[in-house]
Structures are given as C-alpha cells and as structure tokens.
Image (cartoon, rainbow, N blue to C red; front, side):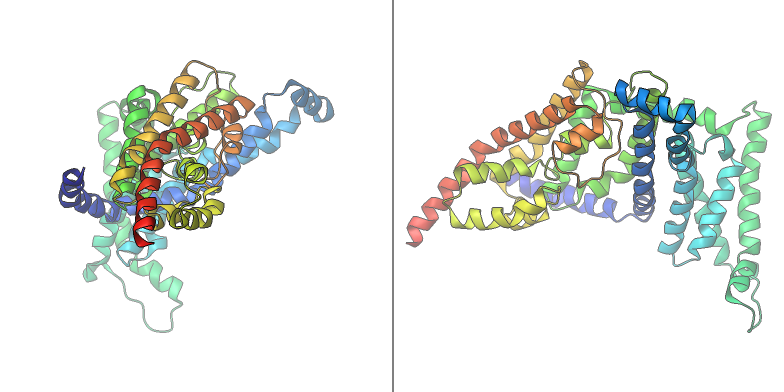
Length: 416
C-alpha cells in the first residue's frame, strides 16, 4: 500500500493538479456552476407539472384547468430550454476574465458565435457541446486580436468607459465573428443544414450514452474518489467532463418524463448526490456512524467525529477528509475509494431493474441523505434505496474503523 501511495504521489497527483487548474477546464466548470441554481429551479417547474400523484393532478386540473401548467412550463423555458445560451455566455466571460480581458465582451462575442453556428435550434442542452466549442474558440480568437494594438481603436479622454470599451472591441469582434461565419458557409456547401443538431446526433448523443451503463457506475465514482484520496477536489477537477454528460442527461430525462416515457439516462448528478455521495464524497457519513458505533471511547476519534457530524448531514465533509484525516490514510484507502463504487453499482442495478424510478429532479448538493433520494426520484422508494446505501456504507467502513480503533487504543495505553 505504501509503495502504491508513493507511486501515485509522484506520477498521478502532479498531472491531476495541473488538470484541475487548467484555464479552459476551470472556465467550463465555473460556467456550469453558474447555471446550477437555474437547473434546480427548472426541476421544480417540472416537478410541479409532473408530480406522479393522481389526486394532485386531478385537483389542479379541476381547480385551474389546463392553464395551471403554464407556471411550471415557464420555469422550464427560462432554465433548461436556454441552458446552452447561458453556458456559452458564462464560459466566454470566465475564460476572458482569466486572461484579464473584457469578460463581458468575451461573453457577448461567444453568444454571437454560437448563434452563427445555428444556436437558435440548440438553445437547450442539445447545443451544449457546440456552445462549449464556440465559447472557447471565440474567446481565444477575440483575446488575441484584442492584444493587437493595430486593431484596437483608442478613444480620447472624456469618452464614457462603456463607449470606449465598445470601440476597442469593434475590430476584434468583427474579425472573430466573420471567421465563425465561414463555418456554416462551408457546411452549407457540404449539405449540412443544421450544424448544432448534426453535431448532437454525431457526437453528443453517443457521448451521453456513457451515463447509462455499468461501466460508468464503476469508473465515475472511482475517478472522483481516487482524486479526493490524494487531497484533490475530485468533483471540481472532473466537473468539466462530467457536466457535459450530466446536464444533457438530466434534460433528456425531464423531457422523457414530461412526455410519459421512461428516463433514458440513469447515472447523472442527482443520482450521484442521492445515492453515492452520502455525507459528501466517499459516503463519509457512513464512516462517522461507524466511528460513533465502535470508537466513541477513543477520545481522538470521538472529538473529530462529533465536530464533523453536523456538517456531514449536509454533505460537507472536508473536516473528515483533512482533519481525521482520510487523505493519504492507507487504512481507509479501500473503503473510501471503492465504497462509493459499490454504492453506485447497487443504485444503478436497482434503478435498472425498475425497483426505483430514475433520478430526474435536480437537487442541491447539500441536501441531507435519504431526503435527497426521495426528492431526486420523486418517490419514497428512492428514500429507501438511499437508506439502504447509507447502511451499506456503514458496513463497508466498520471493519476498517475497528482497525483504527485498535491502533488508537494501543497508543493511549502506551501513553498512559
């Protein structure tokens, strides 16, 4: 185990650290973070319209008629249905700011580039991949052209700052968008009439299929946990990759649900929050419960655990990860890294068998366990699955906690 840890520290951790700080990946991650509150709101709109309780549906229909659906539909139109538009602007803005350029203009140019590509037909999650490409390339071109002083019009003193920035961006933005205009021109000659939908069918849709198989149930939690074990924020580092799968998958699930069809994508962000990240990455609420069961008599363990427990209820587990510590703790490597893999596989198989509805409701990441399972699936069976996984996490951690308790007990006796 020690040799494995040393090898990972030398070869894997430096690469992961650079990846987590890479400019474009950070900008993509932050762009999705901006849209997350809107996605939660949009999920509420869908929940209001599609809550699977016959009495509720009949009551609302009899009281208001079909027009009662307008509220939830409006929330969905203002969130999920313009997700790509929000993302491309936020990406351009964040990437531009990382270059210390005019973030607002970078966002505006990115939006224009997206519409030149035909973004009007892909404002929802269908255009998400194209939006990411447009946001990155448009911002890179615009920033480089803006650094060419020959292309920048400098206004005299006394001109309002907003007007001055607009003239400074005039030629760089015009050249950037003109270059983007060549793409649909070439595509038209090649017979591709809709760039966004063609890209969706060719690339994005097959890529989303990764969220609907057993391999994903193993690889996704393992990748997140192995990063966390070495003190790197696995969720943040992998967010740019995961959100490109999660966000369209959630949107597709909600659309299928609204149409009365089964949800096509099982593994998504609500799924992971509700059934895998119980108490935070690594399902550490199971570790806390295990310590409280067999290690309360050990003062060092009890102190850290009792201080960490309240935050863990809301999936905040940094006190345990860095204070216990879990990071680089060889005894906890197996349960911390592979425990969530087991939970994910169990939840995936149960959902696949139809015993629990698919997770279609976007829940806040800090929703308490079990409650999150009910909300994510809009079913009490989701709460039961979350409770089963919670119990399973305790059982996974328990033998390893006993090892730690024995070690700490021996230390206390030696000190005494």
